[in-house]
Length: 181
Picture 1 (cartoon, rainbow, N blue to C red):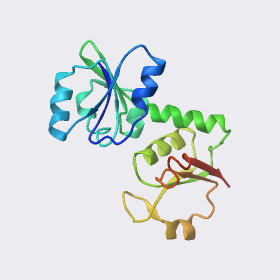
Picture 2 (spheres, one colour; picture 1 turned 135 degrees about the horizontal axis):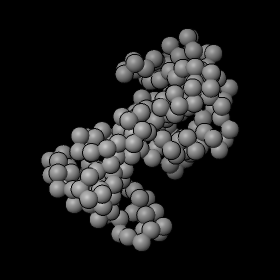
Picture 3 (cartoon, helix red, strand yellow; picture 1 turned 30 degrees about the horizontal axis):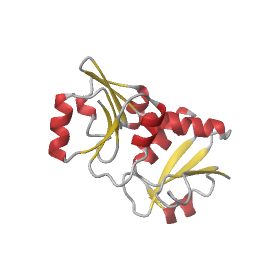
Picture 4 (tube, rainbow, N blue to C red; picture 1 turned 60 degrees about the vertical axis):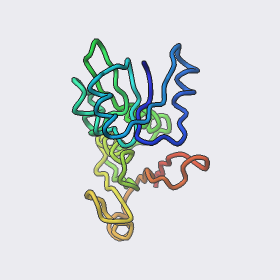
């Protein structure tokens, strides 16, 4: 059994994408918190994609975790091999590809990451892997170690790269952006 687990599902392209490129059925599996626990304990799946809010909640159920998932602290894919669950984070690989494809050179540069959600953790881990001089998270409110936009403007004008991980500009308008100053 292959699928995507989530708490609430509006619209996902996962089913369409998986079923077009692979020879299996991909189930969309919305789970309440209680259903999630039972589902994970049963391990009655071959592989799963994981989305909000379970990317961190799946971690105690896995037996192994790849380096990218460890660096981010979140799992978005799980493979079940003979009852042993391995967690992966493919967001890291996707973001890494985008950075390389567009020749963004982060080494030694200061980076501002707009937003404090899960995608900002991915961006931060990728910045670290590229040896950025520093990655500062920016938010409307001072939370989770982030600075406010006002603080970013007054103290971090020297940033050379800005990564937008906020929902501003999301589908159907525009995808994630990286700006090089």
